[in-house]
Length: 100
Picture 1 (cartoon, rainbow, N blue to C red):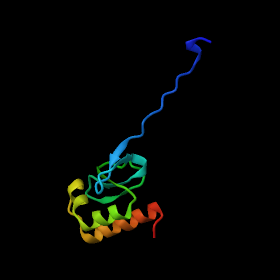
Picture 2: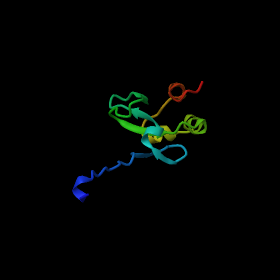
Picture 3: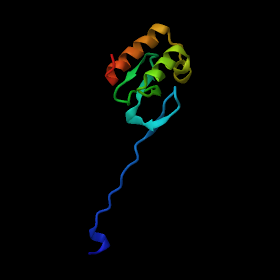
Picture 4: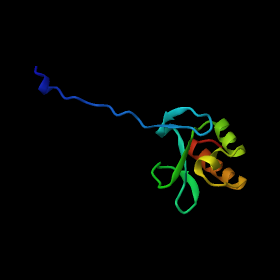
């Protein structure tokens, strides 16, 4: 059997991103993206492809609590979020990860 008859397969590495709270690096698919769109609207990006400045947070409740109580998201997204907006984002993300 010659070398030319064998098919070579390449596996792609999954893109890596860092959680803004705990600073752990994980696969992009394992994190939740929050995006500030060019219009200024901040929302959860379920597909991970919305245009705008993004921040990634892991599904850990401790990380979400830290993001809600501190200004980490404000700093990364370069916007000032009200406490109500942070609470709304936290509620949306809980729905995504299956929490109540």
